[in-house]
Image (cartoon, rainbow, N blue to C red; front, top):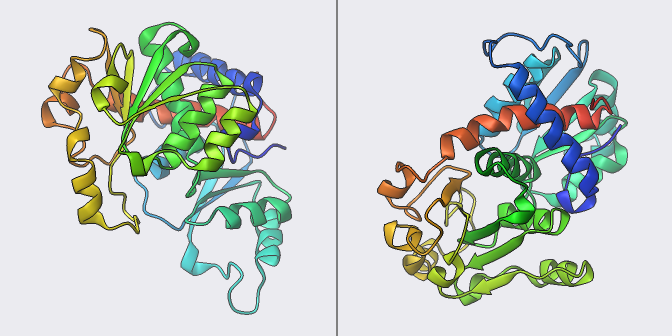
Length: 309
C-alpha cells in the first residue's frame, strides 16, 4: 500500500504514472454514464472511509463518483461522530478501528499533525483530501487539465500563480520541482511563500520567481492559476487581506499580459479575486478543471492500492 499525503514526498515517475493512467481511463469512459462502473472494476470489494473536518463540494462529490466508478464502496463519517483522540479513545486506537473496517482512509482536515499521526497508526492507505499545508489531489488534477488542454508536457509551459501563499500554492510549487516547469508568483510582499518552502526549493536546486507586480508575474504565461484570497477558515484579518490584494485581481487587463492562448484555472470556490468576464470568459477552463478531479482521483486511488496499469 502507499499513502498520498504530500506531492513533495512522491517520486515524479509515480506522479507521471498516475497522470498517464488517468488519461487512459478518461478516454475509455467516453461512452459511459456517470453511474456506469469501469469494466475492469479494479477496486471491487474495497471499502473507502472518508472523513471531512472542513466543508467540501468538489472533493466530496468527485471522490464519491471516482470510488463508485472503480467498483468500490464508500462511507462518509463526520469528525464529530468519531473520538479522534478525544474522550477515552486515542487517535491510535481510532486508526486501528478504521484499519479493521475499511481498506482505505481519506481525510480533509485543519491539522497537518492529525494526518501525520494517522499515517503512523493506520494499516491501510491514507489520502490527504486537504490540509493546511497541502492540497495534493487538487493540484495533480490541475496538472492533468493543463496538459490535456495545451497538449504538451507542463515542463514546456510557463505557469503563473496570482494570489495568496496557501496550501494549493504549496502543492503547485512541489509539482514545479517534480515536473520541472517555470513558476511565477504574483503576490504582496507579506504574502510570499514561507521560508520552509523556499528552503525546500533550494535543497532541490529549483527556483521560482516571486513578483510584487502581478502584471510582471503574468507576462508570457501559458496558464494563470488563482484561488480565493480569503478562504473559509482563514484566521487573518479579512478586511486587511482584501485591501492588500485589491491590485491583484485577475481581470482582462491582467490577462492581456499573458500569451494570447493563455488559460485561466481556479480550484473554487471563487471570490472577488477574479472578474466575472474572465471567470466566465473563453480563457477560463474551471469547469473542465473540476470534472477532471474524478478521473485523476481514480488513478490516485489505484496508486495507493498499487493497481496502476
